[in-house]
Length: 212
Ligand SMILES: C[S@@+](CC[C@H](N)C(=O)[O-])C[C@H]1O[C@@H](n2cnc3c(N)ncnc32)[C@H](O)[C@@H]1O
Image 1 (tube, rainbow, N blue to C red):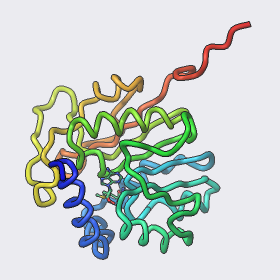
Image 2: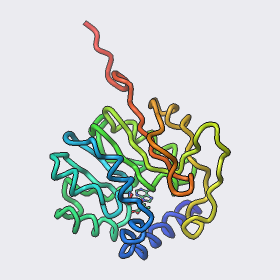
Image 3: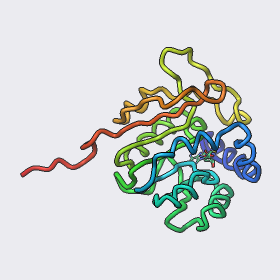
C-alpha cells in the first residue's frame, strides 16, 4: 500500500472511532453555531456539503426547501448523517465518495460547502478537492476551514487530530487559482486558526462558448 493509501486508511479508521462522540465534542467549542451562520441565508437551490460528517446543517436546510446532498468518505459518519436526515447512504441525498473526485456534473450545485475537511488533506489532495468543488459549484463555494488571513503571521497546524493534520492553512490564493473570488466572512475562530470564507464563481466560467 502507498503512503497516501495508508494515510487514507488511518484517517478513515479515526473517523469511524470518533463518529459517536463527534457532534457532542464539536458542539462544545461552538462549531455548530458557526456552521449555522455559514448557511443562514440559504433557503432554496441545490447544496452539496463535502466531508459532511453527521450533516449538522442538513435538517434546517431541508426544512427551508434546500435540496441538500451530503458527501463523505467514511461509512460511520454517513450512517450518522442518515439518522439525522432520515435517508440512507446510497440514496440521492447522501453519497459515499472522496472529495478529490466528486461524482457530479459540472455546475451541478448552486452552493458547495466544506467545513473541517480541507484542513485534513495534504496539499495535492487539497488542490484537487478545491478544483472539484469549483467545478461542481454553479455560483459559490463556502468554507469553514483553517485559513491564513492576509496580513497575519502564518500558523502552522501541527499534530492536530493525532497527526492527521500536518499541513499549512489554506491561502486565499489557492481559491483564486481555482477560478474563485474569495472573501473572508466574519472574525477568526478557534484561536484564530479557522475562518469562514465565501468564494464566488464568476458568471460564465466553465460554460461552453455560445456562438451565433
Ligand atoms: C472534522 S469532520 C467535519 C464534519 C462536518 N463537515 C462538520 O463540520 O461537522 C471531517 C469529515 O471529513 C471526512 N473526510 C475526510 N477526508 C475526506 C475525503 N478525502 N473525502 C471525503 N470526506 C472526507 C471525514 O470522514 C469526516 O466525516
